[in-house]
Image (cartoon, rainbow, N blue to C red; front, side, top):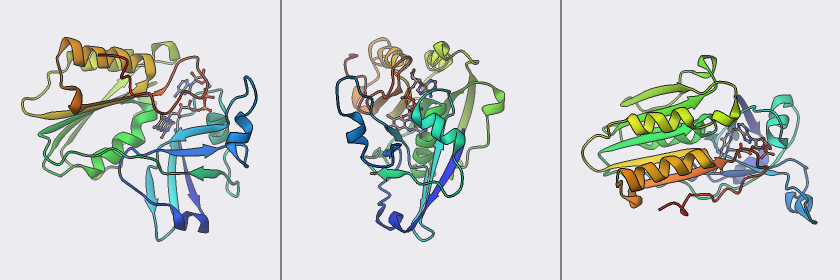
Length: 234
Ligand SMILES: Cc1cc2nc3c(=O)[nH]c(=O)nc-3n(C[C@H](O)[C@H](O)[C@H](O)COP(=O)(O)OP(=O)(O)OC[C@H]3O[C@@H](n4cnc5c(N)ncnc54)[C@H](O)[C@@H]3O)c2cc1C
């Protein structure tokens, strides 16, 4: 992952609105909608998570998974001081339930920023388990989060992107959920998210209203829509 810190007076208008929100990064430097016009044309906007915002210093951190092709990954790989990017947002954030007895946060590397911002927003008394799938042990790093009551379980999928989400799914299936009223947040590759959602809702009868599932990207698909909540599943 590459962390980029954006700064500039324009950020004085940025309104941090809570954990796991999203922003749009526009890579053509003008208006991403113009780039998307015409049959078969591809948008140059991509969706990311505001990881940290410092209103006084006017700094916004975004963490990018470098995965190969794609305007966002390619831009992050070459990012250098002095370059500019257009940022829109933030959009809706995740509403933390202060009454929840426990949290399980399951995601791949693209969800690390979302998971960290949720952990930061949890009441200190809430026990949380984070299942995080990355390529290999070199990608496991100390998460900068304020939550002291959290267990992090790292999972390694290897370098083949076709295996995205497999280890995450296995870990969720094997996990014994604590008693009490908990909440689960899942964000990863879209098909893996659907398998995990189906398991939780149909095999475990986990209440839908306590579950948020999000497809953050889809294997083989460019610019997967940011509103994929897997609601076609159960
Ligand atoms: C709400 C939300 C928040 C997000 N926050 C973050 C974030 O903070 N950090 C982050 O890194 N990502 C985040 N993502 C995921 C990110 O938007 C996608 O990975 C996006 O596809 C990246 O754009 P791109 O231009 O690099 O690739 P695209 O042009 O969209 O895709 C090109 C190819 O790369 C593949 N691909 C895309 N992403 C990955 C991946 N992670 N691993 C392997 N192959 C991939 C696609 O299947 C496609 O074949 C978020 C997504 C959503 C919906």
